Length: 308
Ligand code: GDP
Image 1 (cartoon, rainbow, N blue to C red):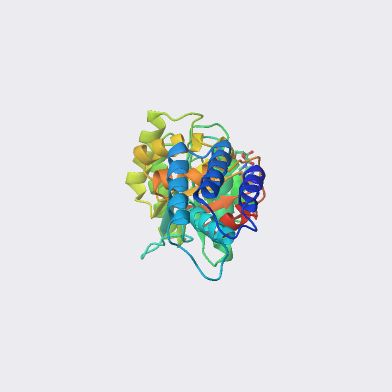
Image 2 (cartoon, rainbow, N blue to C red; image 1 turned 90 degrees about the vertical axis):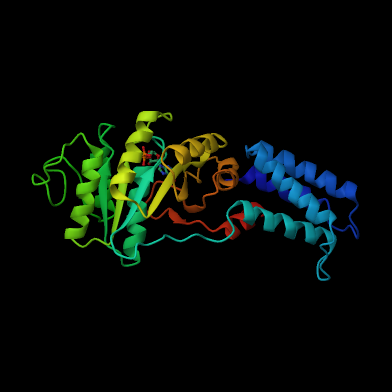
């Protein structure tokens, strides 16, 4: 992951080592290399432009620290700017003052929402929470049973509309199996009555962005008033993540991003662009199919990893 970007950035910065003083030409050359490395990693152009402009300005400015030589100074600046575009501080879940905390998942089909629902519940359970999963992806055949398998693995109950497939409440729901908004509402009521302190609502995704999908997700959002809406995005789609994120930001809105498939051949473009473009923090990262291959996203650790 990020190997190529990481090699190129460290390579560009290594060339500065041993120089007692950096000329503007040195800085320009290094910035050009960093710019190309970021563009090849599929980072969005406006993000690259802003990033390079800030580095140039800081490197050529009077920012001098006695303890660091000029090359170390630039490495420090690049590191700080990377942390900045990755979001700065680690962003934690915003829990509701009165439970249950409602977390809604949104994103394209195949992004990893259902897998994430299991990972997130296992992670929350470890911290003493009692999540309930609610199956609102009623579009894709098999989505409900997939969530149930995930729920079993994470040892978390799943609320679903189909008789005989939900844990608790089946047959008494009186909700239409075809209406995800009703299922979401009934899921919240179920969580209240069974004292689950967190509800994770899985929603339907399409292969591409479409208005019907957005309207449905917005309907669920309005019905359950989530404390967090997590936009789940496959890191391997690179800059397309930005286009998708913008469409979801406009159609549904979201409070945080979850990057999935960071174990794949991700070049870094999605991770480095999505925060800056949407203004929303990356909150979690998923790096495999197993339940435990998931963690809180730490911008500083990711930046250190990218800089080797
Ligand atoms: P959904 O359509 O958004 O609910 O996506 P799914 O949760 O069904 O995931 C789609 C595919 O991606 C499945 O085969 C998952 O096992 C796989 N997947 C999800 N997260 C990850 C991840 O972090 N790494 C890898 N390698 N595969 C993942």
